[in-house]
Amino acid sequence: MALENICNRDDCTGCSLCMAICPVSCITMREGKLGHLYPVVDMGKCIDCGLCAKRCPANLYGTGPAQGRTKEAEEMFRMPDMAYAAWAKNEKEYVTSTSGGAAAVLSEYFISAGGTVYGCAACPGEEKDGKHIPFTVKHVRIESREGLYRLKGSKYVQSSIGDTIPLLKKDVRSGRPVLFTGTPCQVAAVRQLFPRNPENLFLMDIVCHGVPPASLLGRYVRDFLGIRPESVSGISFRESGKFIFRVKGDREYSHRPLSGLRTEDLYYNLFMDGFTYRESCYRCPFATIERISDITAGDFWHLGDDVPAHPHGVSLILPVSEKGRSIIPVLEKGMNLYVRTVQEAASGNGQLRSPWHKSLRIKLFRALEPFFGLRIYYPLVLDIIIRKRFFRRKG
Image (cartoon, rainbow, N blue to C red; front, side):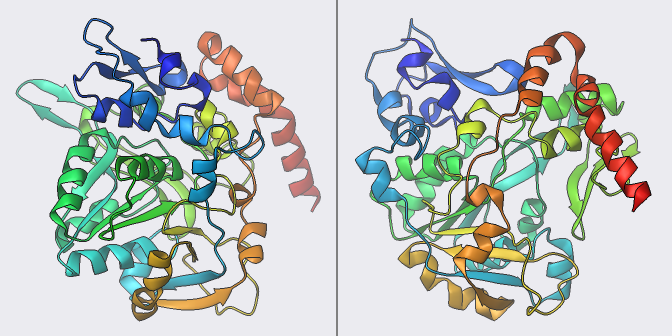
């Protein structure tokens, strides 16, 4: 079986659901361009059951509304009827969260109800039995308040959910409350894993701009920052609402908050300008105001002046399903909550309207990067940097 028989390569989101559900374990995830992971089938083991292609979210959702959705996919997309701006009432929770703390408040609720929480965590590197184990970013299972700190903070890199799928299935089938938080394509994979939409499973997706590969982040830390990946004990991308990339390892790295000049940090700049996303990100079917989760969370940009000051960021909350609407009273207890219109939410966030545009600069970067490396980014945007510097001085 060829990869194309699972899904179109450019539609593949790297969710690894196919690998997790294969009954004979004949699918592995291997790196493609820039380090993004794609499934590869071992033909010697494959029994041609077709389960991988049947469950693959890319086959269900395809390339989005522009190409037309399947009838089954159309039924899964729902328009939220209201939006909320919110931030945690607990000052410590608010300051240590990157966009208001909605995920933290919901996670605390599910743990207090005897449930489990699945979310993205930066896992430290280590030296073990003489081996160098680099840091990684992946989904983890949390069942205690003490572990929730691991899920805090934005991670501008693709998280792997494959290892947690067996644990997720076990928890859901046990009947205990389960909160899964991830990118829309990861939520789509979990929905395919549980097509009957069990009542005890709550899905929250984040507003996603696109995902660089985890291996690219690892190489950047090693080759550009000079930090041994196995020494990395902490990594963060946001601090009190400011865009700062910080790495703690055998030495510490950070930079000035991003200014818009695109000169502070190469990895961050590549992410912000959409140069290192998956191919599927540029045709993402989930970059729309219609959502497939129970609730959507993200940053609320360009919020109206009638909302009180919120110095450390504010969460955007879009309840989508009946389950999502029913959880709002929980958020009201732990957050300052303000009703807003869906139109205001979408107007301030481009990813709620359309996928990131794959510009000519991005296409040139993808073609030239294998020969010239990541720094080819700077010549490609030099005119933009010069213009921004000129107008900043002029102003």
